Length: 93
Picture 1 (cartoon, rainbow, N blue to C red):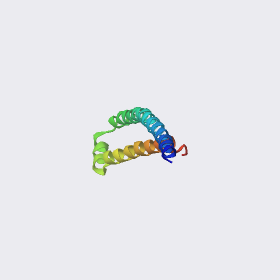
Picture 2 (picture 1 turned 60 degrees about the vertical axis):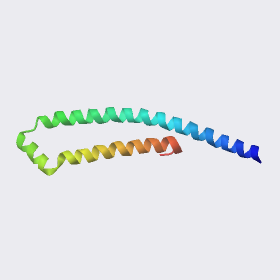
Picture 3 (picture 1 turned 120 degrees about the vertical axis):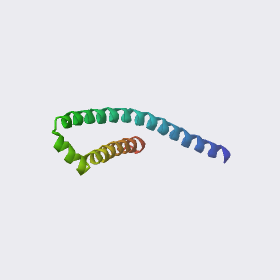
Picture 4 (picture 1 turned 90 degrees about the horizontal axis):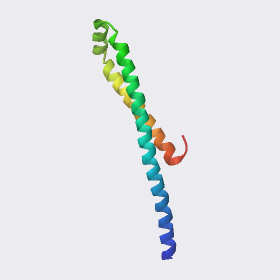
């Protein structure tokens, strides 16, 4: 009985370790590319906004456009990261 329990625990631990290592590697890999994509999006938005007249920038500031972009980009990164981790751990989208 003890040997069966030891084998069962070893099998469980080996699968868990492989999943943890692969999830950690895929997580770092996906976050690197998400960071690159988000940085390029922010740079292109910054370039587009700098050409606007000061009055339009003031109206956008009053409307809270900066907070809107922060929330949308944060949500994009979070959802994409969680979906990639779900795919790694469960192998389904």
